[in-house]
Length: 260
Image (cartoon, rainbow, N blue to C red; front, top):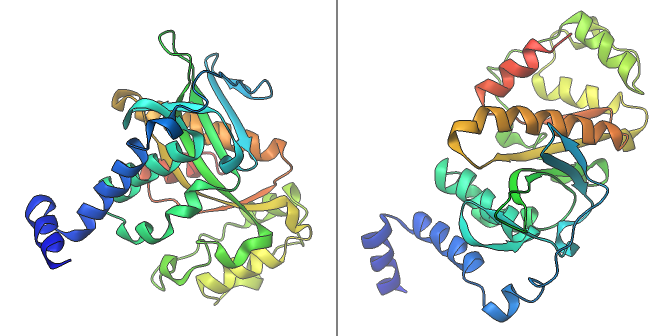
């Protein structure tokens, strides 16, 4: 183990970078007998919705049981849907943004309900994944990252717009909200109050780990399509309230512009 550690530091600079590359390697280089078991079968989902003519989006109830294969920019050959999403999460969140904490929680990205946005191209029979996001229901709220202490900061100032609270109450099955009930409360207290004001918890969910991949020149366009498709897919599935964590300034500005 000491020898492995020394080699990892020599080649990759640190063990965390080595572990990241190793997890990607395992996904891309699975035994060919496993990888190509279903490659002769092209499965299309006829229930997917189409956005902007050529992009498909849908909610997959459990990606671990989905037998379709997809292309991604991080692998030369198509992979099963669950493997593709894990690979994209590793490449974007861990390798690019160095969120090494996710190395211990990769299984979250390999199962459960996910939103996916994908595109068919003329050269491939398998679609290319453009975006994905993990959807968590209120039944497993204890696992939500939204309420995790890691994503809390006492220096954040809540944006308690009266019109926003009013429109939130009207648009959802939520108890009436007034700005006065949140005065002098911490961000954590406000978020919990908002959650427990929802009368029908089945109409709420958490959407996290939103990934965008594909051509870099189309990154902002794909981000726009992903947000639009995700909003429509969740609305169509009966979700009125979505708790999320946003780290991209462009997304914050996008939602702020659409506040009304």
